[in-house]
Image (cartoon, rainbow, N blue to C red; front, side):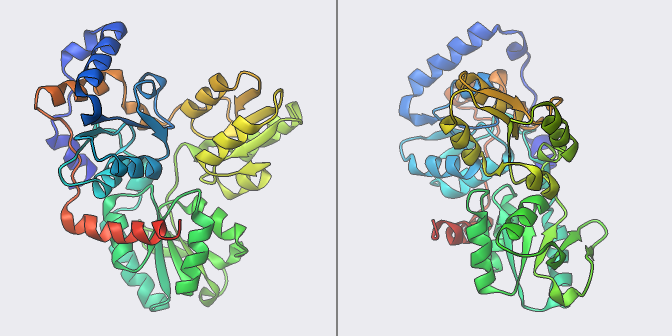
Length: 368
């Protein structure tokens, strides 16, 4: 079942009462439910979530970290995942059968994850095998659907995070001559470049045209990049950097590796969300930073680091629209449904898919 079918079948229409409640009443209700449910309830919140949701989270972190922490929490009966759909899927894959993972709003998807459709991927794999034979190992960013993780697991590959991508790509090249990197071309390109693979040894697979876009001899290709991207990080441009260099030349520029290659190359630093947070928190008081990542996180870093001058690299940036779907009314609705034994929006990955996806996740976790 794809995300559209899930949304349609979930009856995911916020009841009218939550649209008219005051913020104060909603906050009081959430706190009351958390107190009554105690350890039976666990609320992980992704770094990119709204502040109105993060304040009620039991833990904050990136997607895989939150899924792992959910799996370690054996006491919780209900895991209300404040993130997006693929994150809740990963949490369900890693948690116990008796535990219920809930996504407060089923519209909270990820455009990047949706750019790698399983049917397109299966067709691409067949054509790439015809071109290159058994020389390719698939890797997928954890920002992908359970179906894609399962595909990668079945075919001997592994998942990667933005923190360990270099290590996992290096591992993959110990297994096979080439890699297929799903679904984010920018993370794949930046990672491969950083470990010494030239850009002319990389190609892009277009799933819509079903063709490999490349220059030069096809036999020289080492990295096959899926034509996918993060709609947030693609909005940071070289023009943003050029303008900032001219106006504030002393400003440090730090970006996420989901940004385009040319943006990463022009920046002072590039790294995962945890890397960015760590760099900002450890930076000297009075230092200046322009950050190229999601706006909710940038605002939180600004609030938590008043001794530093922090701005968004793109002054016209807005928060991730799908991450922003999870708000206080939807969180309260999810929690009240638990107390009423009428759980809304449970996320359940079917067993065979989960088993194959775990193969991909474990190949990565074993190297941690």
